[in-house]
Length: 202
Image (cartoon, rainbow, N blue to C red; front, side):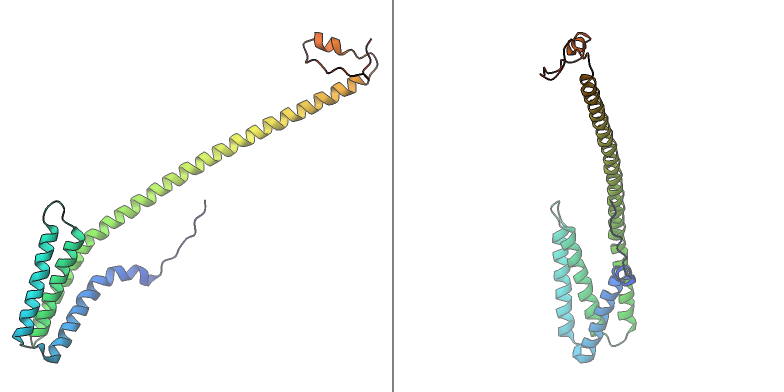
């Protein structure tokens, strides 16, 4: 059972690791673009982002509360809240120091959260590969045993057929000789031969 080996490109390996930094950097860039287009020191825009961030955080809290909480929805809501807060600060302030500080903090927190999921996913992948390897080895062993058993049965059948052919040839050859008595073979314990008219009886 040979499975094709799929070579993953370097981009496919790096992209998941770079996704958190790309996400926070995109929010920071959009916030600074918003800052350059009139959001700087705009109380209304800042209040809007505060309301949206608080709403997203509240939704995340409700989604994570109780036994029926959904961690995916909660994580998405909290990430949205953090992104809105970062965008609001980046859009409101006139300098880069505070937005960059929040960007670094958000990136570190994002990597800290996603690293846990990466470890879990890696453990699940390794366990699945190990289980698949064990099952493949078990199936290969069973296939080899069945192949040996089938080969042995074929050899036994082939040997039996060869013996029967040799026995039939010997009986036919013996029957052609003068003085052949099939009753003598029957008395000796051999299977009874069918009666034929052309056999000679003494």
